Image (cartoon, rainbow, N blue to C red; front, side, top):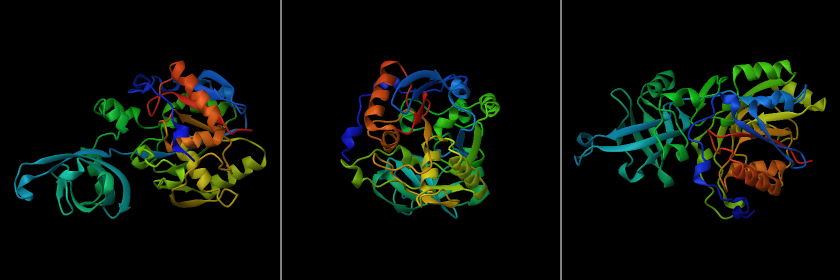
Length: 352
């Protein structure tokens, strides 16, 4: 499909730099099966959903994946120390990580970067677009502890260009139910939930299920091709266990609705449903969902508002219809909804 079909004008003022407080006070645009639009608040969810509905949450936990590193002059033939920004985006195991480095021209294969007094990494591979691979001098828990010591919250680039991360982001850029460390970007639909809202949903008879998809920084990469067929989709690791699958399949058999909390949960569910039935799996997925895709498991999606011409706007257009989503986004912009990771939310149902 022509990527320009998913474009729209978004004013800079619509981009949220801080989240709503409290979390569940964010606005919620309810987009019905027929495309009807209703303005609500996230804390309205127990009244919008019905008993028996199933919300599927991504329990991944964000770690401090943004760094400033130094290439010391004494180790590279003089010329002065070089400072670069590093954003990790994929764990290759055994201390090897892929990362985006800026400015990439300042580092070469074999360079040693110092993250602090104890953490160092060697550049072992360099690719286009500032994408490099590092071999760190630590692995596993020791490496994650080092990241916690010297890293910062990995804010999306459209926020990081406006301000530096701070202590408030440590709490703000993490869901209240985060469990397993591994993401370099938050599953931001989940940022709107509070313990109190989760309790109210349970009391209303809404079932909650959990899976893991570790979000990579590739989620922020723009679509550079003119046609969706030419886009190289990033991959992310997910896992969904047998017990969860059995409960979700039982819900589907009962005719109950399955709602993904975030595009990451949706991508995991649909990746695990490619046989036509949801199956327990643990693997990488590079699923790219565009209009025409036949959804196997998901009936609804709660998600924030996405970038123009992004793979995520294509995904929501596949769920509800491109014209419906263009109209919904036009309404959101006109009525002052806040966009992107720290912005407001939407509840979208699969087109009937």
